Image 1 (cartoon, rainbow over the protein chains, first blue to last red):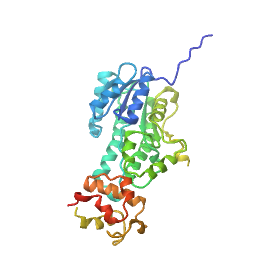
Image 2: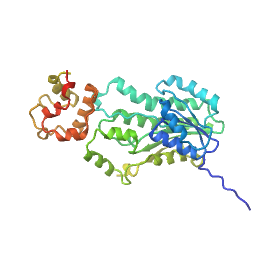
Image 3: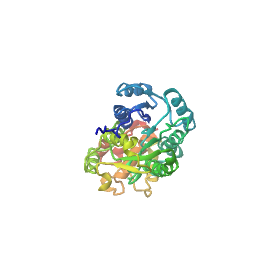
Image 4: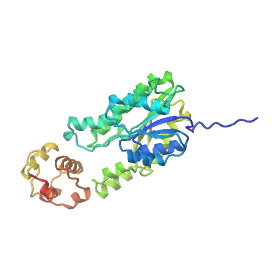
Length: 257
Length: 76
């Protein structure tokens, strides 16, 4: 008897939009899922850096799609155009996001809106758009929000950031229920500290002692981009067929401490 | 912002009682100036003076006078 194994972890024939694909976690995700067979639409605001991501992708059928997600009302028309040009979308990974270290006393409406719009509002409108029949793959789909352990625990001076990520948890649960009839799953991934340009920028302001203190808070050490990419690929795949409305913590043990 | 204005501004933003900070004081003698205050100070300076101070620079100064000297000619 010949039973061929069909690998549920592969993403062949799946078209996925990845935001924040010009660097860090988004770039790492785009590369890994291309290696697993996905066709990747790389979004960011810097065309040159998007092109650099593009040339590192495996396989064919990929494209760049430069767009500023802060223009939330234009997200759906933009995604519709992508769908018309390249084909229907299976998934969207919202890896674009900004960090903000600011004591609450210093948060103005503008500063609040900056973080909330990119991290949370854009996530909402990306998810809402992919639900449209003219955009989504008829077989189903998977939406992944790259959140943060700061959606579950927090620290001083990151109130807007924590808020923006915790909001994704609530959003993903409701959408998970609402989109289930169309077999679209919605999940969050909550990484702890990952070595990326964003983190390097943040810790520039810290003393060496503070940086060492941070590393010690991760039983398995600081994370790498691949750690988040593997988890994302899993949630995008059929191996996660029955997983929706959850927050996958990928944190080297940070929240276990 | 003028140098003469920074102390009241900081006390306000950090939620400290008026008079907590004065230029001649040694930083270590002011317990309310903790790691949170340092982080806030860095964010404050970046926001108000467009200047990014680093943790190591701050760790080296002893008095508030030396701390504000780091802002130097960025004051009005």
